[in-house]
Length: 97
Image (cartoon, rainbow, N blue to C red; front, side, top):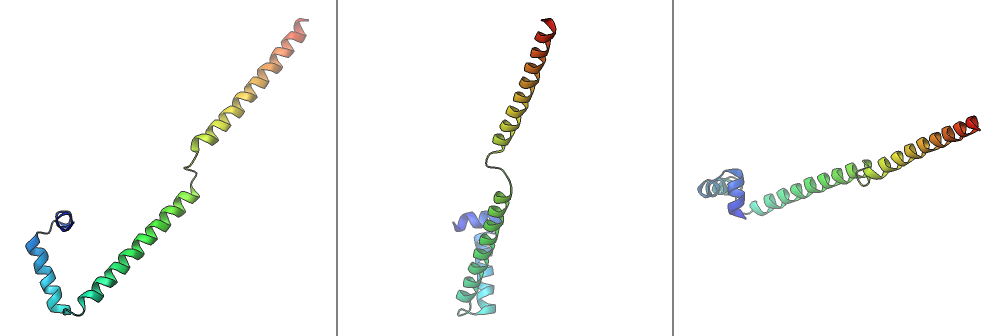
């Protein structure tokens, strides 16, 4: 996992150790766990917020069955056209008789 994060961030192992050493010098060994906990809470809040946004977007859009409404509209149009043709056919039959 660390090697993936290192590749992802384009930071080598030596650079990562150097950054950790600087953080250790600046904040001290006793503050690092609280900093890590704060970062973890922040990441969790960001993840929750993005999940809430995703669910809100999926609720407000009709992505579930877009073909269902299209199929209903098409069937309604076909039945209207069929009714018009039947009326026309009946009219022509009456005119011929």
